Length: 93
Image (tube, rainbow, N blue to C red; front, side):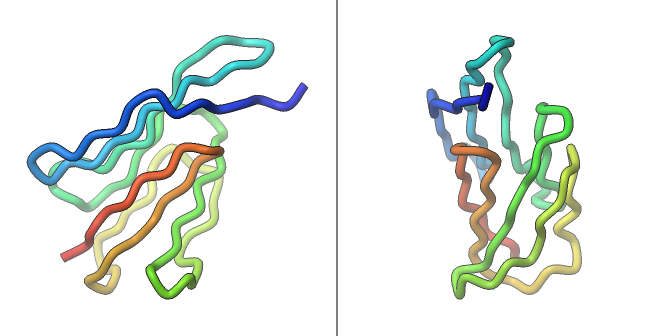
């Protein structure tokens, strides 16, 4: 059975971008897509989650199954991360 994600919360607080997604399907868990305040690591609580990150030009900069993606060394700019239907926008300075 394919898992469905429903966005239940999004927040921008003191430079921290986070997205909470309610994970429904066979198991009922919550997954979070989170950018830490230092802005150097994109994290998720979902195990084996595919995260796709694109810049505003639509170029894919990351496409991986991981719980953490380091963003240090990326060019400054706006990025969009997606895990299932959960989407978070963040700025790398």
